[in-house]
Length: 121
Image 1 (spheres, helix red, strand yellow):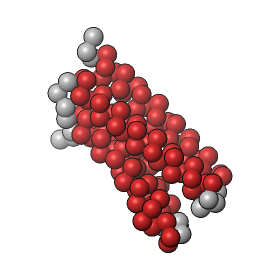
Image 2 (cartoon, rainbow, N blue to C red; image 1 turned 45 degrees about the horizontal axis):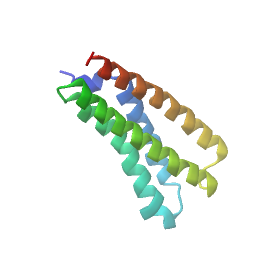
Image 3 (cartoon, rainbow, N blue to C red; image 1 turned 90 degrees about the vertical axis):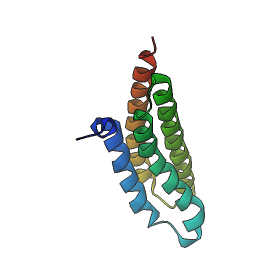
Image 4 (cartoon, rainbow, N blue to C red; image 1 turned 30 degrees about the horizontal axis):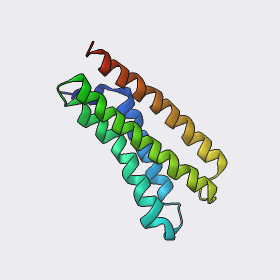
C-alpha cells in the first residue's frame, strides 16, 4: 500500500533534491560543516517531510499550510546555495543546475498548494 504522498511527483523530486544536496555538503569546506551544511541539509530534508506530513492532514487548508512550509524550506535552500556560490564553494554551473531543479519543485509545490486550496471552494 502506498500513502498518498508517495504518489506525488513533487515528493519524489524533493527526495532527489535532498540526495543532491547531501552529496554537495560533503564537498563543502570543513569550516562550514556546522553553519551552511547543517542548515542546508535540514532545509532540504524539510521539503519532502512537510509534503508527507501535509498529506496526512484532513482539510485542504491544513494541507496547503504544510506545502507552504515546504516551499519556505525550498527558498531557505536557495538562500544557502546563493551564498555557497558567492563563496565559490559551488560553481556557477552547478548553482544553475540546482536552481533549475528548484524551480521545477517550486512550480509543483505551487500547483499542489493551489489544488488543496481549491478543495475549499
